[in-house]
Image (tube, rainbow, N blue to C red; front, side, top):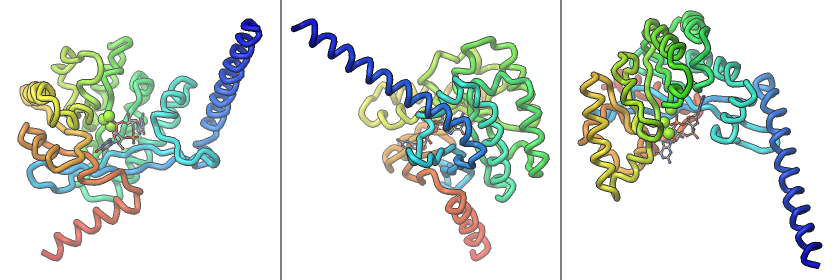
Length: 280
Ligand code: C2E
Ligand code: MG
Ligand code: MG
Ligand code: MG
């Protein structure tokens, strides 16, 4: 009898695994057709200067509007897209759309976009970026690519070469989610990164964990000694903002200053600022 029950459980688990596998296969299929079906769009989260609280740019973040599943968050599909080799194609679309947005805004508003480690090893990435900049007549310094420490997991030679060629276009390179990955302090002196982004988890825990303040202090010091600028991500409260400003962060990003916005809403924000300046 116990044996029978065990078999039932085994069957239950294998059914569950089976449907998980089917779900994953469907997700992959849907992902392959998503770009052609125009199911992706970018949202734009404001970045403000710590000193003035003025808008300095936006981070472009991808969204997938799945016809049945609804809005699928990037953490749920980017790893899958990377695994099945779709990231170069999706990434190229992100570059194109980010440049299009930047072209529609004044020079004082920059656009950051995220680049997957799978894209950074592609020798044609700098050409792709250069062509998109040219097509939209956008200066390289209006665009910033955000990469994570994961880019240093493989062979560093090609990665560093691609990063240097991107910098040569005037494009900024930010090291995203800094502090959560593998120790990459050794890579910081390569004159490649112009910015560090302190991960939101550090920022939000700094209020309750004093050791986080010490970590942030040393990250800021490190960045300053390499003449890199510092962004604090995940700033949700006025206290978070005060703390990060006092610790020396240059730019601030987080729900306090705005959630990721549709292009139309982000554009309203930019136009609103321009009009304010004209009126005063
Ligand atoms: P990320 O680049 O570190 O982006 C910041 C994430 O934190 C975004 O989540 C943003 O919505 C969220 N966030 C911003 N402010 C706050 C805050 O105050 N509190 C909290 N709790 N969260 C905040 P999102 O849009 O879900 O993106 C997650 C990750 O997916 C991104 O992390 C990035 O690694 C990846 N991703 C997003 N778009 C793209 C893309 O176009 N290409 C690639 N390769 N990766 C992308
Ligand atoms: Mg980012
Ligand atoms: Mg980040
Ligand atoms: Mg993050």
